[in-house]
Length: 122
Image (cartoon, rainbow, N blue to C red; front, side, top):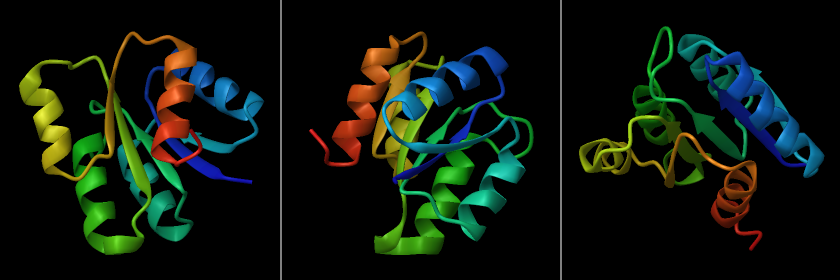
């Protein structure tokens, strides 16, 4: 079963993401804290990280940068999920190695399509 780690501090969005992915057959762990997410990603690397940009502790962009640097070519895929949707924000995600950038609000169907595309299942 494919393991996905979600770092999202809005409990409603976190629950929505977790339920949608679990119903699609993924194993999901979630945390609202950036520092905890980074530790979880290093200790038990997921296949995919879904990272909000604005998190307590380390932000999603910094987590992405550190994970990509630590694991190199074996790094998990990363989708940034953020309400910050200006071109500069998307470019900041690209600069740290994010594989995709999903702007909130989003439809759960769109989230699942992005996840499957990044994981090569579409």
